[in-house]
Length: 410
Image (tube, rainbow, N blue to C red; front, side, top):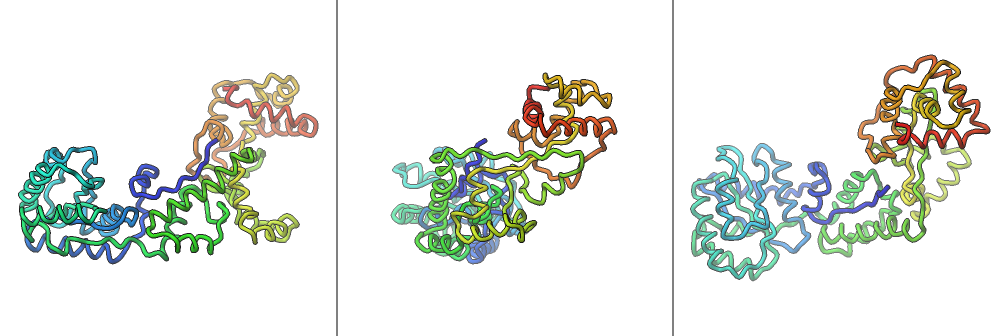
C-alpha cells in the first residue's frame, strides 16, 4: 500500500490534494487588513477595484486571497477563480456567465491567477476596458490579479490608468503580499503533516533542523518544497532503497479491543502512534530502550514506524470464526462448527466486510474510530472462537491463512 507523503508547496496543489483546506491556511494579519481596506474603498466609492497582488512565486499570493475569504466570512464571500485556460479575449464572457449576484454586504474576490506576460496587447486593452465598465456597476467585486514580473505589472498598470484612472486601480491597490512570517512556517508544515497522520518525529525531523531549513529559504513555498524533497528522501526513498516491507499488526480477540487499539494508532490509515505507545510502557525495558533511541531523530520510534508504514487493525472474533467455517482446512471447520455454527455466506459477507482488517486489505480508510464493538456476539460465536484459539498453539499458521483469505471467502 502506497503511503507516500507529498507536501504541497502551492495553493493549487494544496487544494487538489485536500478537499478541506480551511484549517491548513495560516492567516496573515497585514494581508487580511489590506483586503479589508480594498473592500471599504470599493463600497465607499460605489465601484469595484482592480487589485494587483505583487510578490515572487511561492510567497503566498493566492493563499492570502483564500485566507481572507475563510477568516473574514462576514465581509467576504467565497473566492471566484477564473479558469487559467480561459483566453484573455474570452474572460469577460466567463465573468458575465459566472460572476456571483451583487451583494450589498459582502465583497467577492474574482481571482485572475496564472496569467503572466502576454503579447496580446489588443486583447489586454479590450479586456481592461470591459473590466472598467463591469466594476463601475459592481462595488462588491475586487478583481485580484497576482503578478510576479515587475515589467509586466508596470505595463498593465499603465493600460489600467489610461482606461479607468484611479477609480479603476488606485495606487494603494498595488499590494505586495507579505505571506506568513518565517516563524510560522514550521507550524504550517506541522499542520500539513497532520493531514497524513504524521508529526516531525515521524519523518525524523528535529525542531532545530526545521528552523535551520526555514532560515535558508526565501518564501514559504520554497520552504515547503524543500521539506517535501527531504521527507521524500528520508521516508519514501529510504523505503525503496532498503526494500523495507510494510508491517501490519492484526489483533483478534473475543473481548473488545477496539478502544485500546484506538489509543495507540491514528485514524484513517491506522498508522501506529509513537507517543501513546511509549506512554503506556515508559518503565518497561522496551520503553526505556526506545526512550533512549528517541534522542536521535534517525532512530526515533515515529520515524521507524513511518519507514515500515506500521499499522494496527482489529479483526473481530466473528470474522475469525466465519473465516474458519469457510476455510478449506478440515480441522478449522470442525473447531468452528462444534458450537453449532454453520456456513452462511450472507452473514459471512456482512461480518467480514465490516472488519477493519478487510477494509485495510481492500484499501479503504477507516475514517471513524468507534470506542467499542457495535452489537453483541452470540454465545455460539464465542464458543466457536474459543475452540479455534485452542488450536492456535500448533495451528496458528493455518488460522492466519484462513483469516488472510477473507477476500476469497466472500
